[in-house]
Image (cartoon, rainbow, N blue to C red; front, side, top):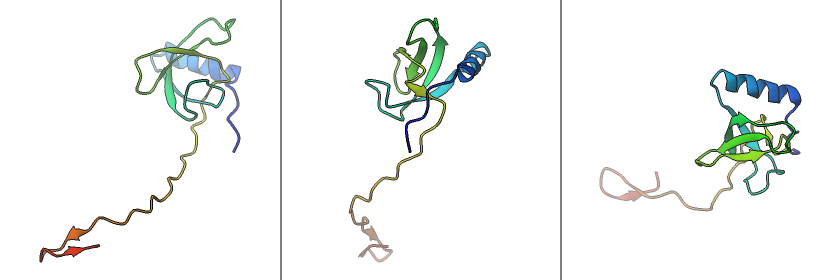
Length: 104
């Protein structure tokens, strides 16, 4: 699956409307977002001057910082969850009522 497309003008207008109604919008970072993990989320908390390249003000999840991003660096499309590979670990032994170790 390729990288999601940049935010469209209508999506940016919807984000602005949500902000005006006091609802910050969740976005996800694309591969174009330098220094951010692809697929990590954040909230758009303000929209600056669209004449600037990076006019979307986003607070990444788990951060207090507010950073500027362009419409190509974020998307409204939530990325698919990647399945984690099996680690090869065996199940932890448990004690059965008799005090013996068992696997189940």
